Length: 326
Length: 159
Image 1 (cartoon, rainbow over the protein chains, first blue to last red):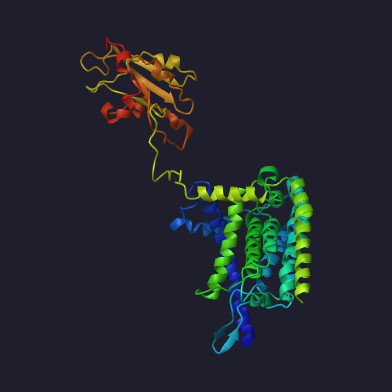
Image 2 (cartoon, each protein chain N blue to C red; image 1 turned 180 degrees about the horizontal axis):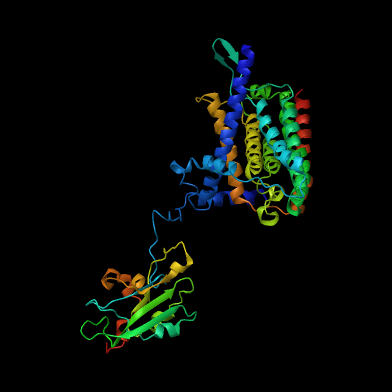
């Protein structure tokens, strides 16, 4: 019973924090983009525009849900959920702090320490692709279809490199549990051992989350929003949240795999974890403000001819070194 | 390629601590440049008499025909303007106006000028038909920026 209560509290806290951070990331993104573009950004609603996400949320809730007449209604309504739920669920296996003692019981600061945590994250990432593709297909409209097409090809080809780039860390640790991976970085973060893996992961996580310069599926300028062209109201908001949630999740994964997760001197573990996640989030926004969108063939060429061979090379080299060291 | 991206990131980072170019509009306003062509104003002489003599040259010069003037003889006892006649009706359709400034160039007495005002909104199209009392200023000295709109030496001297 007490275990269940602890579990519930952890779930509510983790997902509540995730949603809150995701909402505020929209504000942060607009401020960061404004910063780079020598503008001010949203600063009207509340101090420094901090109430902007809430205003946006209320606005979206009161908007009309438009479902195209020719759309496959059931799939159209379900697709955003298929996108959002895996994006949120993936955060469950990421440890956001060391264990704490509360009311005489040891509580691990991770929602669920799954022994195949890495696989779990990739599995959910794979399902998330369906949300985009299904939504695009169910819209029964030209631009979403093109967006969905791009998304399917892009996400499938980059998922490979994404998995490969993490394999080096898994080889070193010998465990698929994210808790063990953090534990293995007690001495130094794995970015020192896996610099190439880290770089590859950085690129792949941009592609996985449909972020610039890999934002072809939603390319506003060419596809008027791509897969979510036909979406409005909360269904659109769900896609939006899904994108930000998966950004946060992948940032957390990057922090866990390469920067030692919640480890750090002086500050409490949760604070260190958040600092690292926010640093990655800033990187996402910074790159978006800097890079132009790739052309479709460049995207595929880069994924298959550069990233994947490098990732395989990294895995083979890591395995070789580990074998030599015994 | 990596080096180019890093260079790009550095450029964007440098931009992020530049001075902002945003003007926080309702709180702060930019000063209009000299020669800005905003809402029309009908000016007065220093003694308070209207400059407009009702000659209708502005109306003739207007390319979109948005000015309507009707003139009447001045009452010698209480003249409205310095000329023989004055504008009894002076209407400008501000929706039709293209703010070209030809009316102001055509005016021989420097009566009609385009001011700095650009915030004029109405809730009905009909209300954009501005009448003489909407355009006429109380004292020209209150609008020093409008004086720069016409050249005193080029005005007709007989008025």
